[in-house]
Figure 1 (cartoon, rainbow, N blue to C red):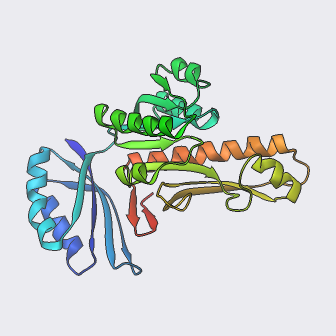
Figure 2 (cartoon, rainbow, N blue to C red):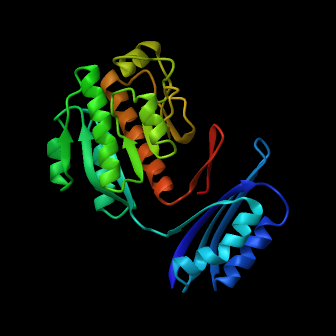
Figure 3 (cartoon, rainbow, N blue to C red):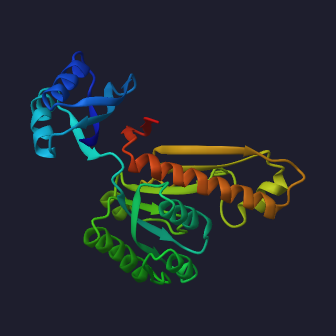
Length: 281
């Protein structure tokens, strides 16, 4: 028996669930998990199912094809738990990369990490500790940035990359790269934005007496830090905490939030609905 995961997106109309269920029966499938959502905002129907069946992929896809055509469905069929091939981009901050590497090694995150790319050498030893290849390419000029992004696309192609994660990669991604990786490029940032931009946001937060610290993981678009949000977390703080303590708290939230977003994406639980996301937890 293979445990399949099936995601469906199409215009909402009557009969979709009945048709999908019938096709799964035709494929000798048993539904083990089912979630659905109809968006009033966009008139779109979303569904995620997990199905046990002893048929192969071609047989399953053949059973689904007629209803996919009838309802204009965008279908994705995958195997539950299959590790998603993921490329990570970093700069100098280690916390997010360390959490991803640790949880992948511990079997808590269904990803494969064939490569880490960076514009600084600082995290090479961390990647080496986990046995992941690391490349550093300086970005000191516009030409070097173009070359770095070309290397990213080359790595995506040669390593069959399905997801690119900006794990505190402190560079603005070009609109061209955003377009090429649309829907499979995830970023993390603190949730002070747009309040405290630039250097030392936690010192700015301390000076202003901030009471909440959080983090946001989102898809990257050409609109800076405004892509569809996948996950957010927040924790209360108070006046007694120093800027260094606030940063430590914030980094924990960033790591936790980014790892959760990557996990949901790898498990095919994230579907886009215009400028927002549908998360089937």
